[in-house]
Length: 301
Ligand SMILES: Nc1ncnc2c1ncn2[C@@H]1O[C@H](COP(=O)(O)OP(=O)(O)OP(=O)(O)O)[C@@H](O)[C@H]1O
Ligand SMILES: [Mg+2]
Image (cartoon, rainbow, N blue to C red; front, top):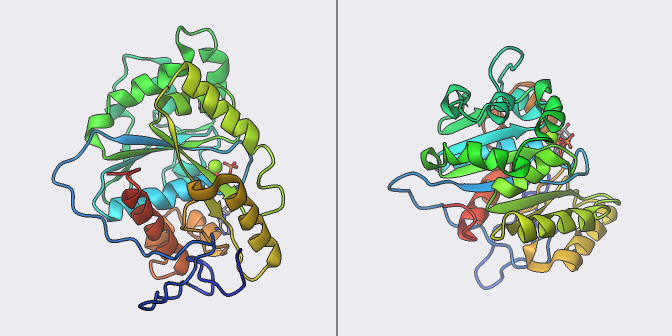
């Protein structure tokens, strides 16, 4: 049961520091942990690949990809963010203009092409991106007749996996061929859920799709976590939705919850992650905590 005033990273109220012998309860109803700073890595790669997936639009997939990627990079992980949405919001959010540069689409169409020619480094140290633009919207039509059309992205990413510790794929809001490619290429999937009334609608279909991919294409894919986003601890509504999400997913719900704040749209417009735009803001701190939680859970090296 979640009650008003409980700590939520990223919300205006911020997170209460756990007092000794009195660990406060976090918004997901579990004790609130800060998670330790991830240890330094001695070497890099091979990458663990994680798809950020939800066919519902506007739930925070792209925002989470950008800010989780930047947070992991800040902890010294080498990160590749893959824009897998023809809208190109991930590319734009990381300050990459994509109209006349090679993109992930070129790699999908031409298996001989070297992904290193398409990778772009960002303003964030340790963070690279495979950009996308509207060309990618043609790929479903082009790829539908390919042999092993579901494994095309997996084959592209295999070529760069040794250069990174983690690869995050920002999926488009659909369960079409591109998303199936992303799930087939991934070791894990992270589901962002917006804390609003229809949050759980369609999630059963998403889980069913993941199960089908596990069954037929990628036996080892696992659910790395469900991330509650746009949580507003001041509203009963947000708290009730989160409670329902915890009822449905239990410990798969990540302890880190992302609060609702206008800082995200502001940061996107300026083309930098919130961890750079407003590093002290509770929302930036929330994504750093998410990065630490994923390392603590073993989802990231
Ligand atoms: N925690 C948050 N608080 C407030 N606004 C947010 C938050 N997270 C994301 N947003 C804003 O909500 C909008 C949708 O977020 P985002 O683009 O990350 O979602 P998405 O799931 O990638 O959407 P799409 O399905 O269209 O790709 C954006 O304008 C973003 O800036
Ligand atoms: Mg998006």
